[in-house]
Amino acid sequence: MTNSSAGSQTARSALIAVLQNAYSGEYAASLAYDGHAGSVSDPEEKREILDILNQELEHRELVGRMLAELGAGPDSRKERLMTVVGSTISALCRVGGWFIPMYGAGMLEAGNIVEYEIAARHAIAAGRPELVECLLHMAEIEWDHELYFRLKAEQSVWSRVLPIWPAPPPREEIRRRAGVTS
Ligand SMILES: [Fe+2]
Ligand SMILES: [Fe+2]
Image (cartoon, rainbow, N blue to C red; front, top):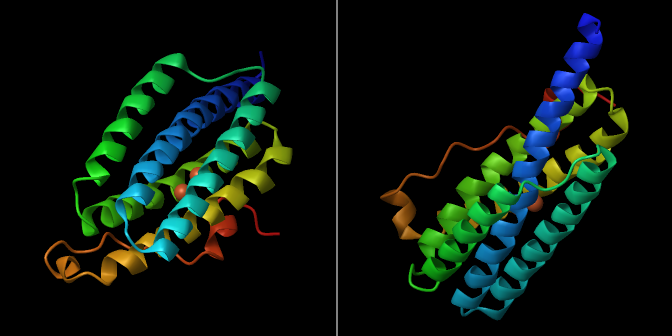
């Protein structure tokens, strides 16, 4: 095996691992947002969180298709673990008041942006450029989710006690940071 084909195999394995994390993470997010939507009393807020939930399920479907195209599939251990995590967060949302679920969601969304940027870089290195556009679009949607929850959390007086997490770089930089400038 040449160095470059060994490198692309390593990138393919790394891409599959990130996509398996994302696939199970999206399910955990959808469970958590179900509890979160049930915990808010404002109908508009409830609808907005349900919209986000649906976007996470769309992401899961897209990532599932990518895994299949790569000849892989979900990791059953991660699926079990993230089902527990999502169900636990969902239950906690119902007792956690208004601020903590907004704050927690925003912090997790910030990580989701980076996860899809990393996946896009691995896709390029693995010789799968056709996956990059979809991965970066998902990173952009996660950026929108992070902003939504950041603005919510900032409305609370509790944000003076618990400082808001560092803001991600501007949305326009997602493609540049992933090494895609078009
Ligand atoms: Fe997502
Ligand atoms: Fe999200």
